[in-house]
Length: 569
Image (cartoon, rainbow, N blue to C red):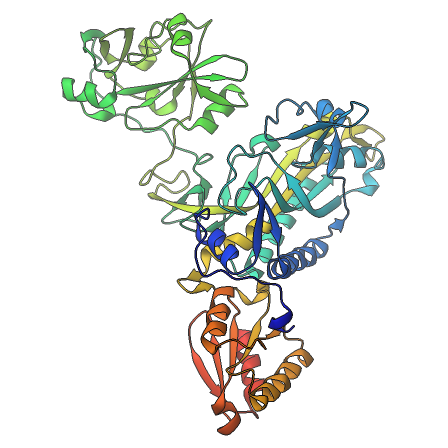
């Protein structure tokens, strides 16, 4: 490819709308252009990178016995209503009616469609296991699309669905995909961690997120400093913190005028924060009041709380709803709350506390010496707190650290969630009808491209891993008007193509500085410079974008030396 023919409109200034490096650099380097909020056009450079990522994915999916198909983007509502997700999925789903009034959606995911397909074709255990995948656009009406390709309304995704006859078979399929994902992201040149995660709207039991480590990532990850445990903070397990043994004291009410925060209470009473209990009140999609209680220095993990009470979404509770249940905002505790009007959830660590301070459900009043086991009555006891830096690892007890990452893939064990709802079954060895046991496995293809940039860039531009760079090598004649330089550049260009190296020749009649800046901005892994020294002194300069290393080769040895450099990248 010649740069003079390449459609890659670069920008010198950082667009005001772009907040993170991948968004800024993809706009500046001519990879994408915005069509609408969360909707982008992929220009040729981006499309080349995406196709390379897709090729790696296809190779590993096929090697793991996956078979590629293409399912419809437009999905009928009937299947989603049959699975029970038409309303549950929420406002992120793009819904519309055709001219006959029939309801459809733009597919945010494809569990219903694939289950319907398989239930109509698979009848015997002899047809299992079955692994089907596609690479296709997905659509979600994000309330606040942002960060370029990180959170858009339209994005490219690979999704594979496995069908097995039992849980043992699902374990095998899950392991295949887990290992395949590890190979895919390694081949893409990413630094990543598989972490335990919550299954969210997809549902199911076990799930792992594959997370590219990056400071700009939206996901927070708890990583053990000793063992290999890693989990999304929404999922991270937490051991009970047992309070030291002490003599039980009688419950006592004490005046705390205008002391509605934990800090105000401990300042008045001179208590350590570990002796206090924090209350947070929510309402769910069924308008149930959910009152959650954690230790004063802890935070409520809303995802864990949703799972504990079977809620799809939570919002902060209205004050009047709290008052109607016997609670008083700023002075709440489980003591005195009406259990018919409130679901009371207490963190496991709170139940292990002794002689604590909590609200009295009266204005300007708190209790001291509360004993949760003795005083709280009928409550739901669950791990609902958010992990924090320094908490003990649930596997080995060493402290965890909190880091950030970008979710680029996720693997789920769905079990029979969808096959049971959609009546997708098979006949086993004994002729008995059983539900198919399913798994689903997704990779954000466009997100993977963005994540690679977040991990690998500098002040000058993108630094692509070789495997997914739009071009591996760029040849830059210093003076494109110099026939000798262009002739040598053309010869080297031909040699690169003959060796199946993905190469671009920058034949533009621009100043050398402009071409060098563009090469760094776009992020080609290798730059070959053809200047006066190459013509007169047989010195061909080769620069490695990642390290900045410069090498001088001759016309006789550059070919072999360049191959060696590329192999190491």
